[in-house]
Image (cartoon, rainbow, N blue to C red; front, side, top):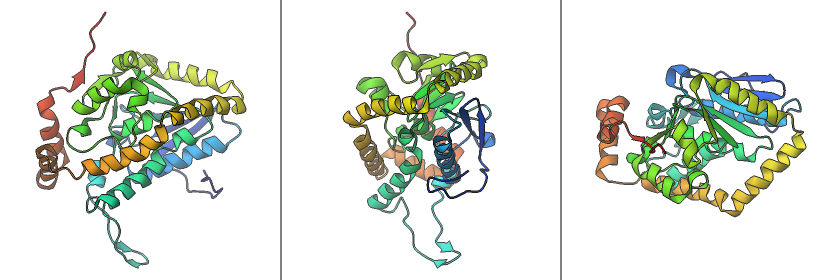
Length: 300
C-alpha cells in the first residue's frame, strides 16, 4: 500500500484490504475493541482509501467493520490519555487538546483531515453498517457516498449528551434540521430500519442479507467506467459544497472544541468519572438517565 505521494507504506495491521471484481473492501479489523477508532487505525484507513482511489483495477470501495460492529466510536481511553513529550529525538512540548481552545481546534482539524478524506476521493464509497455505528463511527459513515445498514444496526452519537458535538457534521445534509437536532440534542440512537425512513441511511436489510445486498450494489456500481463514476460523485459533492458542506466541517470542528470547554454539570461529571472510576463508569453515569436511548418511529 502507498500514500498519495507514491511512498510505499508497511502492510496494514488494523484493517483488511481485499479486491475482487473491481471492488475494494476495506475492513476495520479491531473486533475485540468494537473497531474503535485510534489514530493508527485512521491513518491506515486513509492510506487504504487513497490506494483504492489510485488503482486502475478498482471502481468502487466498500468500507465495513469486522465482527459484530461497524465502529463503536473513537477510542476514548486513548483520547483522554493525553500525549507524551518524550521522543527519540529529544523532549518537546506538544499541543494538548484539553489545555487551550486553539490546541483543541488544531487536534480536531488534524483528525478531520484523515476522517474526511472520503468525499475527496474520485471513486464512490459504500458504508456497510452492522451492529454499532456510534460517535466517531458516524463521522466516517456519514461521509461515505452511500450507506447500507442492517435493520437492527444502532446508529447515533451518544457523546453529544456530555462530551461535545460531532466534529464532522453531515447530519443536517442527510436528515434536515429537525431530525439533526432531535438526534444530537438527545444523543439517542436509531435503528438501521428507522434510519432509512428519515434519510440517515439509504437502505436497510435483515442482518443475514446485508453482505449480499452490499456486494450486489457494489458490483453494479463497479460496472460503470471510472471516469463516469468520478463525474457523478463530484457533481453531487459540488452541490453539497454549494450548500456549505465544506465550511460546516470547519465550523463543526471549532464548535466541538468550544463545547469541550463547557463547565456544565454533565461534562464535569463525565471528566470526574473518567479520572476516578474509568471509562465504563463514566459512560454508565452519562447514559443511564436516557434509558435504552432509542428513537422509535411509529408504524403506519
